[in-house]
Length: 102
Image (cartoon, rainbow, N blue to C red; front, side, top):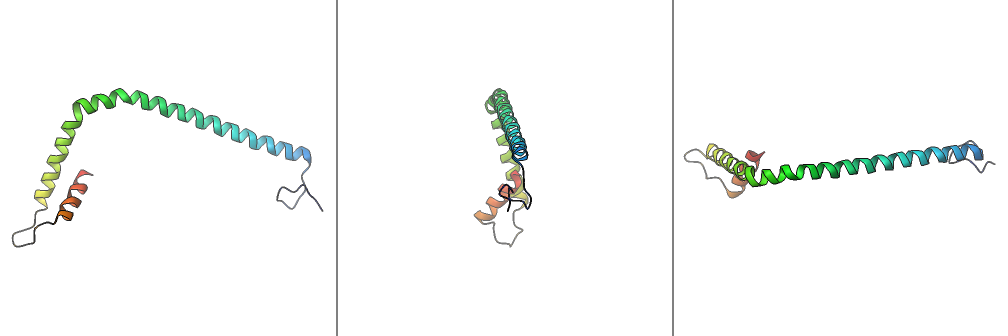
């Protein structure tokens, strides 16, 4: 009976188990370093966008919201029921508004 199987039907020497452990540790270290690098890049990108976001909110957000409101009104007018039909319910108006925004 073989006690060094690592869940396999074959035996592994101590040297082979050490090599496997080194490979797994190397993979773990590489993965952790990559995740750390990506996280730092994400944080740096967020800080770089801060100025852009600030300018947008101060100058362009209200313009975009007004344009969006105008588009919603146009869709609501275009979706108005024909003469003799039931008027739109609040739920229908909400759904039309949401669809027109996207």
